[in-house]
Image (cartoon, rainbow, N blue to C red; front, top):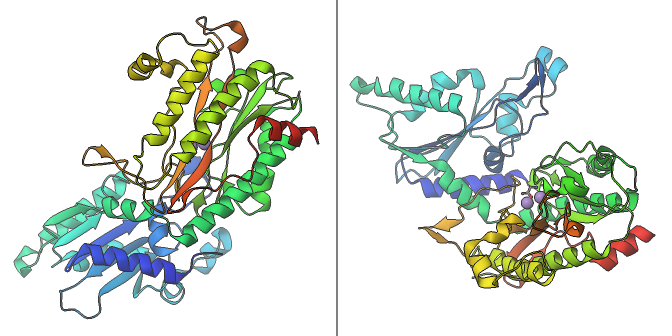
Amino acid sequence: MKLTQVDFQERRDRLAAQMGPNSIAIIATSPVAMRNRDADYKYRTDSSFFYLTGFAEPEAVAVIETFAEDDEDGYSYSLFCRERDREMEIWNGYRAGVDGAVDDYEADEAYAIDLLDEEIIEKLLSKEKLFYRIGQQPEFDARVAKWITTANGESRRGTAAPAQVIQLDRILDEMRLFKSEQEIALMQTASDISAQAHTRAMQTVKPGMMEYALEAELNYVFGQNGCVPSYNSIVGGGENACILHYVENNKELKDGDLVLIDAACEYEYYASDITRTFPVNGKFSPEQKALYNVILDAQLAAIDAVRVGNSYKEPHNVAVRILVQGLLDLGIMQGDIEEIIQKESFRQFYMHGTGHWLGMDVHDVGSYKQEGVWRTYEEGMVVTVEPGLYIAPDDETVDVKWRGIGIRIEDDIVATKNGPLNLTAKVVKSVEEIEALMAR
Ligand code: GLY
Ligand code: MN
Ligand code: MN
């Protein structure tokens, strides 16, 4: 199931309603990113631009205009995009063109992107407010500033640029933070494919395999389902798991080590984000198992804390307490639990947060605090829950048997009126389930 123009239009309706009369919103998509010389990265449209338009081509700008309060037409939606061009399409692929923008993407007006500088001035004149995503793209910011100067140069006509410029991301980010049923369904599909990929990795891994070869097993599942990774995959064997953003993935996986995989795909522009840690040879050592179970207990309790009305920080606080108690019980830390929590000395072993918003972007938009206070979970918010412990290989404060073990467990959780909904439950995570799967 994909989103349709009805969904994108409903989002534009909601944005226009929040803009008030005599306003204009300008939303540009991402520029093409070059990999080297004339080879570009595969294009990925800007999430907020796609959220409003469903349009995935590069070089596109959406403009939403509201008019006088008594205007019955409501608002107007213009799409500036690449024109159809037989020669360019033979080389670089299909374009919707201005006709497609109107016929297939429901634009009220469509223009060639080359006409943007010219056409936008007329649209800016006489508007009171400009809604713009300030700071996303420095080069586009400079263009917008120039349009404002040009429009103000028209003051002798009795018109000028909008007097107010408002940070559009504040509105869009808040809209995107709350996922509809359809968005959750897309995230469930992304999660199911990612769960399948992790399951395949558990079934395929064996001592002597290279980390990149295991990454290839994940990519096989993503690719077979028409998906791409939603972020760079982390496949870290042994002590590489202690490097939080390890993406080299170029070492050999060794007998007796764990492997940490933080990898997931996006489906129809909606991300998933999964981490599993499991033994390369299929069997946890006593130390690996003991530490793993501390993290699993912390993760299960933290997931249970993703409840409507709870503070955003509640899962983190719940996880930290269980992790610290576990570190004390295992003799990895010494001291008083309250003091360790208060001074955050657990950061020696747990140095990242317990989660983040998840949506079209893996670290999704949406504020975490409102007026300086952590916000509370509301229905439709999606958050990751990803506690871990990382014992550095050279940490001489810890018994040698623990050193070089890095473990994280990560799932994607929706806050619902019926409690936490785990989108990524289809990949196993208890010691027993993992060992059973790997023994098959
Ligand atoms: N995969 C990125 C993260 O877990 O935040
Ligand atoms: Mn994450
Ligand atoms: Mn992750």
